[in-house]
Structure formats: C-alpha cells, structure tokens
Length: 294
Image (cartoon, rainbow, N blue to C red; front, side):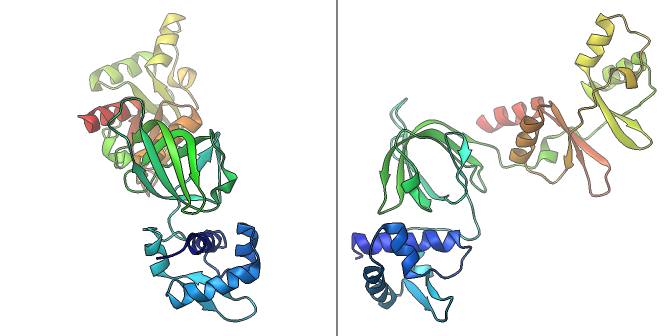
C-alpha cells in the first residue's frame, strides 16, 4: 500500500514523463512540481524502485521513468505517450494534460449527473468552477461538457458537474454520404440544373470545369436565382465557390469538425485518385444520429 506522498510522487513522475515525451525525469523536476525538497523525493524513489514502480536511468541525462506496474497501480489503463484525450478549460485547450479515465458517479438523478475524471498531467493549474470540455475520446468519440466542482491533487482526479454528454457514432464519413454523385458543367443552364436535381431527387451538385471542382450548387442558390428572375443564368453565375473537400477515409467526427470550422453545409469526399466518391451533408449526419439513438 502506497502512502499519499508516494502516490503523489509517482503521479508527478508519470505527468512529467508524459510532458517530456517519454524521456527520463530527474528528482529535482519532481520536487519543483510538488514543492518539496529534492532529497525527500530521492529517498522515496528508492522505495518506489524496490517496489518495481520506477526504473532508474543512468548517465548525465538520466533520472527515473515509471514502469508498467506504476500505471496499473494508479489505474492508468493507457500508455500516456501514445494516446491523448484533450481537455479544454474555458474554451481553450490545455496542451500538457490528458484524460485517462472517465467514470459517471450519479447518472440516476436527472439534472444532477456527476463524473470523476482521472487526468494525466498537472491539474493544479485547473480551478474550481472552471468550464471544462473533455474529449472526444478515441473509439467511441465521447465528449463531456461541465464545470469543475472538485479536485484531488494526490490521485490526480477531477470531479465534474456535467452539463451534457455526447457520443458521435463511430462511422466513416463515406458510409453516411451519398455515393451516387451527379455533377454539372460550369456552362450548364439553370433549367437543366433544375431538371438534373429533380430527376435524381438530390439537393446539391458539384460544378466541374476541366475535370476540377470549381463550385457547388444547392437549392438555395436556385431559389435566389428564380426569385430575382435570373432564369437565363448558368452554373457559373449561381454557384458557391465555398468548396470543402476531404479524403473519403475520414471519420464522422472529423467531418463534423471540418463542416463547423468552414461554415459550410456539405463536404465533398474524394478518393486517392482525386475522384469524387461521395457528398456528406448535415442532413446525412442528422439521419445518422437519429439512427444511432434508435
């Protein structure tokens, strides 16, 4: 059974080990982080070493690094040097800390859901009442929004009052996209574009010139042209040049981020040969969420 000081030293070692991208950590660095005497840290390291929790690294650039058993002792299930689950505080990402584990502690009380968050990194920089966003996590794309209501510096745990929890379906964007893509030439007339959309029961189409995507036309573009009686217009006159393309192997979460960042309603997916393989819209994403919930 580790003492509280030993647990804090071990957690500090793991935090610094991760920040240094998995290079050995000196006792002086741990002492600075904890606000303790380096001699005390050095003495405790010998005990932790005898327990098989730390490993000494000789040489002028040496120090200590945690063993696999150290992660298991502190219930850290992932290698902190390979997996990073982001934390945002008051809207800003905190680059030197990551989430190790999320546990919901009170999901049965409506409006009063709490979660404990095991964190890799120095949590002393976080304050009570900070607005926090956690995630998305790997595999299940879980994101948690809430407020910090408690902090345990020894076990490196935060207590969160959750506001919302979102899990994005783990799917590839191409699996949700419309694959039967119709395109129009840049000189196609408005009437022909309307017939194309109607005949194929679609709401938007890429505009092509010399085998390149130069624009996108959707229903709103057509409605505006008709409203202003611009019935003689061609694709080049009414198309939007705000084009968003991405490789068709991206996942749904990445696609959603791209749509939001670029403030557009659809994304054109392309394969490795730069050919159009699908179009993903907000409507496609909404259908995916409804299916996921059902």
